[in-house]
Each structure stands twice: as C-alpha cells, then as structure tokens.
Image: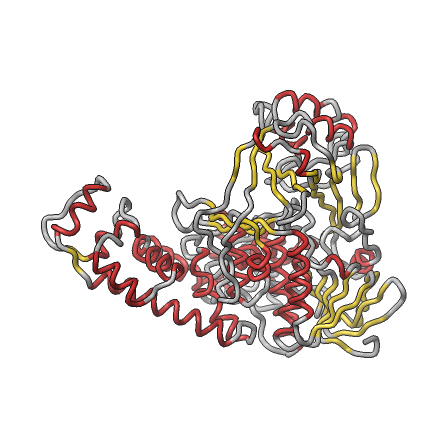
Length: 623
C-alpha cells in the first residue's frame, strides 16, 4: 500500500468522504479512504435522520447520480415521511428516520464491496504539495502515501474543540480526538481559514420517558423511499417519533446557567447554524416565545437510545439535566450523554472552483463541513461531486458541473463558490430559483443521463429511468387524448365543489383543476382500466400527475432557465484582466478578481457585482 501511487485519496470517512470514495472507485480510480476510525464510517454524528425540506431532494439527486446515500437510507430506515404534502410538488420533501448503528454498518459493507477501494486507519497530519500540485499525504506515524489527487472531507475534526459549560477539550466528535496539522499546512500554502461552530443535544434512555404525555408522530400510511433503484423496498413496519414542548419553567432553569454558557461568556467566538440554533440561543433570540417544540427520535429498531431534537446545547451538564427533567414526559429522564458544542476549522469556499478543486493547489478538493456547510445531505452531495471530479481530473477529462437549473446540488455548490459563507450553510427550497423544475420526483430524469454519460450511473439505472419516463409521458398523453362525458364527469366535479361541464371535455383539462386529485380521476373507468392494463407503479403515476397539474408552471420555469443558460454559455477567459475594464465598479472588480467567475451568469450572482457591471462585461466581450 505505502509504495503505491493512488489516483484518489479521500481523507475522512463521514458522509462526504464515503460518497467521494465510492464515486471515484466506481468510476475506475484506484482509491484510498483514510479515516481515524474504521468503526465510525458514515457515522450519524447528530440526528439519526436523512432528508427533510430541500435535503430530501438532495438525497434523491445523489441517488439519481449513482451515489449510495439513498440506498443506505432505505435499507436502514425505521420511519418514512413525505413532508409538505399540503403544498405544491416543488415543496414535497422526503425524510427518513434511520437506525444509527445499521446506517454506519450498511455504509461500511457497501464500501467494502466497492471495487478499486482500499482502506487505512490513521490520522492524516499533513499534505505533500509540490510545485502547486498535490503529491500525497503524511500520517501521524510519519507514513507518506503518494497520490494524484486528494479529497479533504474532515468534518468537524480540524482542530476541533468541544464545549460543555465551563469545560472544553480537544475532539472532533464525542469520544474521538481532533485532527491536527492539515490546517497549518493549508495556511502555509496560502489558504484563508476560519472557525465555525455546531452543536448537538443530549442522548437519553427511552425507557425513562413517559410517552403518554407526548404527541405521537407516526410515519406515512403508504411510505415511499429514496432510491430510484429496485434493490430497496418501502417500509412495511415503522417506528413512531414523538413531540413535546419546553415551557417557561424550562426556559427559566436554562437561563440560570447562561453565565456558565460558552456561547454567552465569550469562549465560543465562531458562528453556529442560524437555522438550527441551540436551545439557549432560541430562548435568547425568541424571548417572546413561551415554548419550543422538542422532537423525540428513536435511534434505531432495538436500541433504547433517544435523540432529543430541538434541545441542542452547550450548557453545563447539570443545567441540561435539571431543565430537561422539567419537559413534559422527561420528568424521570436518564442521560446517556449530555449535549455539547464544537468549534472547528473551515476554509471559505470562494477558494474553490465549481468542481470543488482548490484554486491554489491543483488536484486538491474540499467537500463537506470544511467548506462551511452543515448537514449530512449537503456534505454527501459535495463528496459525490468532489469524488467524480477528482477521478475526471486524474483521467484528464472535462469537469462535471451541475447548473442551478439542473439540481439542488448545483445551487448548493454555486452558492458556496460564488457567495461564500460566514456561517454554516444549509440548503432550503427558497435558495433554488427553479425549484418547480428541481422536484424530488424527477431527479432521475434530470441527472441519471448526465451521470451515465460520465460512467457513474450504470446501465440498469439508465434503462429503468427511460422506462419510467416513457410510461409517464404515455399516461400524460392518455389524459390529453381521452375525453370524458358530462354524465361521467359531473358527479365527480359536484362532489369536489367545482364547476360542472355541459359537454365532453379532455381528461387533461379536468385533471388540471386544483380541486381534482388522482383519486378523483380514478373514479373514471377509462383511467382505472389504463392503470391496470399498463401495470403502472406509484412513481410513474405521481410523475404524470405532476406533469398534468403543473404543466403551465413547469413550462414557464423552463423558459426562464433557458434565458439564464444563455449567460451561462458566455464564458469569461481564465486569465481575464478586470483591471483593464476601467468602467467596472471598484467593489465589482475586486470581487470578480477574488472569485474568478467562469461565466457571465456566475459573475451576476456574486454579492457586490451590480447589473451595470454585468452589462459592461458583456459589452467588453463583444456581446
């Protein structure tokens, strides 16, 4: 092993590292995955769940591209819910509770079954950089391993510092040591580094909770799944989560410990995730609220360990314990371990190209929390893209970059590269301007052909996607071509309190009405016969329903995306001299010199670049 030169070395085996290693190896690169603990591959460091608002779309995109996260989630899920079903399909977001131990085990088994992938357990303490190119890694034992590319996915481990009240100690995660040396090497190479913070709640003994005082949160009656492949199946049995609330009494008990909180006494100076604040931060920021939701999430099928979602904290353990015992249902709670905050190094992502390769060191890629993101899904998506592009770089092939109108993954990476982030970045549907196109139901249509082209998505994926597309298009055409009489339609329309018809109409027009759902259409004999005759599965039916009911919105968004892509096609030369364009604003010029946008469209999204700057660039380039 030590005498070999690897194509790709992935440092860190969290969600980003696992996807990066799988992608590079599956595409044919000789790959090495280096981690401080092989027992903790793809560990769910925080809540035992995948997906959620916008994050569920990302997991489906990873699956459509040939990544492993969707398959692993399906195989280890204990509950599945489709969130936002009361809203339009652009907002539907799948989420699954996972069995934490089985999740990590399944990831390891899938990685071990992946050809071209080696493993090594040790801390990476340095990087070998020669003439501006990555050449290898150095471990804490002094082992040198040579490589053509490196993907860094260090999570919260780079100079990690854990805080619990007045106590602080080095660590990348509870019970695991921090990683030292890499930050220092990168800073010496000219990289800008920063610090961020995240936190986690206490884990408790489920046997000590009184669920009769909580509100049950069951899974869906007809659960779906993440993976488009047929190697996983929807759950037949599910475990419930539960919901309870804090109270003013709980808040007062927590306030008593604020003077001992590292968040408020100045020991933590870095920024935490705005949209996933600690309980003390919520009490402080939302002082008008007399209660906050707490979600009680089981950590697996058989374990009694429970995750207390909504109670993330770095307060002293005695304050955590006393306050939590005042929450309804937690009166006799027993702790497995207290919550804590962790500070760690990150590198502002404006230092990267859209491939996630660094601008300063050729062949060096960053993915996950090292880029300032938070969340398993965001990390996994970056890992997948970095692994793909590391392989393509070694093979001297063109880069693989997703546009904003092609994937949430494209939005995520473009936001990071173009805008940067000074606080942990989390994906939301509102960040995507083309979210009607980027739905969870059509990720395979959007991305599987692209992945198949570069050799990651396999033949069976491609054929399955093509079959689904053909069947859904045929079903939509059936609605366009088939009429229904007023005698057949009016009883259904009256029952839904919508206008009746006086003559026959095409089913497409009836189905397009906002009041009419698929269940209503299935009351027509012709529709039932079509579904039964063609043996349509739920994914095909759902896809056709969306295409019928939202065809106008989808077409409008496609037209807007086409306009954007005209600017995406106007490339800026790599060594473009912005100083020569005197009419550019000072701020616009400086921002573009720093970020080096690749296209006019990307330049237009940089904070500080005005529309007039974009017009001036277009004129200067003869457009």
